[in-house]
Length: 143
Image (cartoon, rainbow, N blue to C red; front, side, top):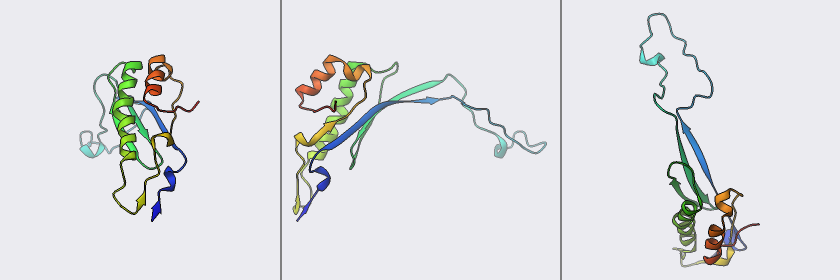
């Protein structure tokens, strides 16, 4: 018989939104080529032509498993979008972790009360409707 010790006391969840910028060249890069090789693909540096694009993504993970990576709509994330991400991402991960193990000899010791949710103090994380949503769904939040 085996016991999943990683699930015994508490599980620390971590997540955050991150921005990825496309088309931003933070430093100038030079291409050195021999004379007469100007259009040789070996010496051509690919560039991004067009507007700069920022893509915001949200993710969650535990010490054992990665949760889903969710691409957020343009223009940032507010309390309503954050709630949607929690519902689609975090709750999906928790359900997956609470699923009974496939090996009948493994003892399942993770229960809903073993989770501790951690987030930073971004405005959408501190919004009253988000905190109420987490409380209603019995998600303990690290203070």
